[in-house]
Length: 147
Length: 414
Image 1 (tube, rainbow over the protein chains, first blue to last red):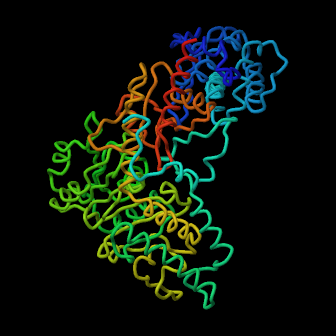
Image 2: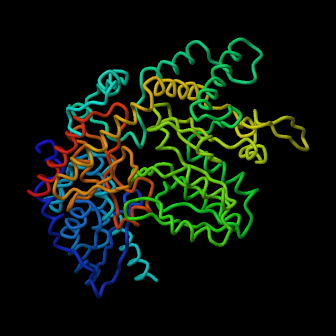
Image 3: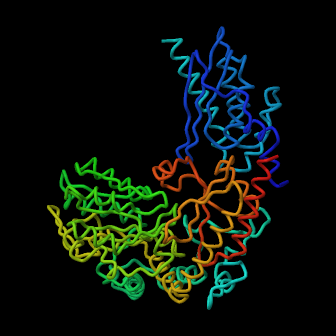
């Protein structure tokens, strides 16, 4: 179906079918959930730190192919990164979803597979939901560290 | 029924030509619109009636002492007459509201807050749209009434044994139930439900948002106490809906909203209320939309519900058979009496992905929980896709849906 190759690319289908980072990480340093009440999609993220860098990441995602693959590709992109670096990445990802322009950064070698979602406005939230959950998890971790 | 068989006396191509939007292209493809249960498309007759009102006969209603206001008031009240005849009730029993949702909220906040006391119970079914669940939850929390949920069977019909149990303690004062499920397509046996409720001292409210589009509704025969529907699902405009209430019930109910048009007299100290239906129509109403709804009723009645129902029955049979023949596709809702709403799942493919991949083929379906989240969970699901039919739906469009679903499966099997 050539007309949807811009969205349902091989990498997205592969990660939706066989994600690399699924599970309920334990022990973990921070966790958060994101859900979309419009469709019932739900993402739970757990991360562990090593010297302020994310050393391990797992997600449990109940959702569409876009949501699952986005959570999984996010895992590839954020392992080894610090909180501020991830916040920057998340912003760049949001911008790509909205306008379709691929950021000139090495992390987007795979994340670019989701750029096609920009043409499907009703599906933006599917791609962004895992990043929102991750930001929530990192926010909690910050509170914990500062508290 | 095969795609070649057509309902007698029902010319779907001619009907389609009445709907300008059906000749639009989507993603460069012919639009296959299978989302009429969410909101139906509008025939030229409705569009023209609304434009004509705004171009030639428009002013505020019930107020102006001038020609335009009188003509426009006539048209607005004429729409009420059409609705009353359509449902076989009196015009004083027809309240114009924004939509079915507002109608139910009106009943909850007026009848509910004055006639139901703490300890009384309201019963709704497991297959209600949020519109016929949330207003009763709000009333429960405000008023201390109990909200009970009657079960449905796995086929998607009211579980009568459970209904008996819900009513057993004699505390139920209102049964609020759908006339046709927007997910399962089930028509509920409304005459029998009304009798059941009345025999036990309860009133019955029917959510007719889906049913009224597909079959003739005679509220005298049903003996409903309250009935609601929305104009936009009946090929009319958005922003106009109908609440029917039995005259004696409306007479006893306090206003819902306060303002102009709903009063008898006003002083700084206090006000008195107009008679129904005006008591419940505060402020300038949706005048142009009411005229549009009247035109929509004229339109469907000219076609006739007998042939509409036969056409949609044949479409539904064709859709259920076509989808069932695709391995990995599962239809929901197997009530004896069901209408043209077919929710389904596709193994291994989330409903959103189904909807997006169909959309790229020009096929519009809905995906999600269809504003019936508890029902979706009751069915053991998180979301479903839904194809729904209207008078302009063709057998060929259902064939397109079936072919489209096979392509969805191909994409997901790569």
